[in-house]
Amino acid sequence: MSVNGITTGTCGYTTYESKVNVAKESVKETAATTGVIYEPSKKEEATTAKTYKPNTELINKLKAEAEARTAQLRSLVEKIMLGQGNAIGTADDMWSFLRTGDFTVDAATKAQAEADIAEDGYWGVDQTSDRIVDFAKALTGGDPEKIEEMQEAFIKGFKMAEETWGGKLPEISQKTYDAVLEKFAAWKKEATEGTAEVQA
Image (cartoon, rainbow, N blue to C red):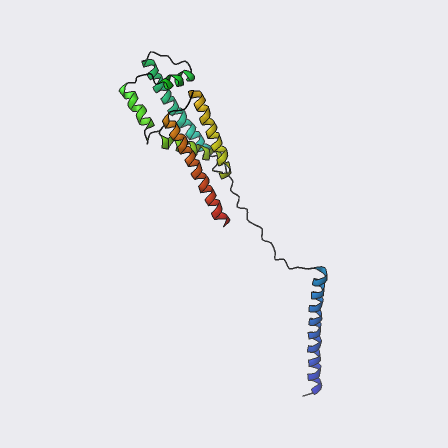
């Protein structure tokens, strides 16, 4: 075995090691002078924005149901008015007639009216307040950013109803008003808590 072969191999290794060290120093100097900073590749953030669309099917269903029930209520009031010898001229006449409370009704009409405004009745506080809030949700597609707008529209509508009535609405209407505001608050709380959970 030749000593020169070992020496030559060692020199080759030393030369390679020197080139690597020079390259490392060059990279360090370049980074220091040019301000090169490692930035990991950015992943495209998935868009999770929810799209809110009005639920036209539910809106149409609620409108049709309300129209049918309103026609039924109007028929009931007309029957009462005719029984008193009064003719109904306009909707305003109907409301002023009802507001006076100066009328009598037969047992069947009274029973129907009581069933309609009972706790579980169609015009009762729970069902009416549910329909109002469901309608607001259907109009907005459930968009929590529209809750305030829907609540303001409800309050405005209630004030208009009081003007049409000619004063403060009956107790059942006041209770329905309170129930609707509670349900709007619950919707808002639910939306806020849901947003907080997503952001966490």
